[in-house]
Length: 217
Image (cartoon, rainbow, N blue to C red; front, side):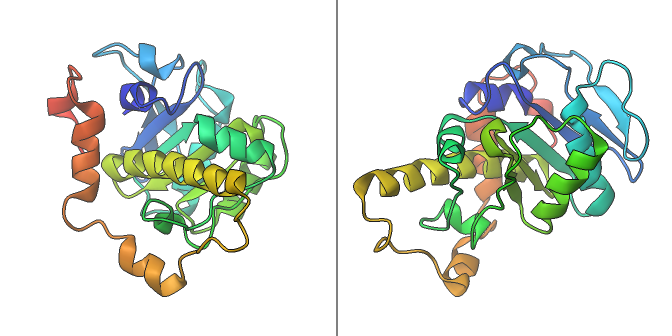
């Protein structure tokens, strides 16, 4: 999942991803650029509650808050993708204007504080704002997505960047006021997982990876 995020251009030197192990623990990828995580390189087991283990990046607190508050969530991606960053620099967020954006209806919550999330108080604030949404934009510091499987989390990360790209195009056209936005009913009908939506995206983004055949999507 870490290498896929990097290969897809969703994260460069920064970012991290994780998956839940059980009710009390999750596994976060190695604390290095995700594209440089080696095959077989171990991550770190992190408690859902309590201090972060030594060497774990401080923003992994965001993962803790999600796993603590939302028992259905099994995977988290924290990433910095180009269109999301550009949109955030304008103080804007993603709206449900196309199929990719429909998964985030009515829009992605936007955390206004530009500081890095390196304290429990800030992490609680960000994930409290996220609520039951699948994603939150953390100002100019990228985004966080959470899902019920690693494949869905990876798909949501891809969808968010694509939806942000569309939002930038709408803004650049000057037609924001007249450009359609999905209704709640339309978004619910479009934002489906049936038909191996997440599994196909997983295969697409992990193709050729040395560990892809062992991935639990």
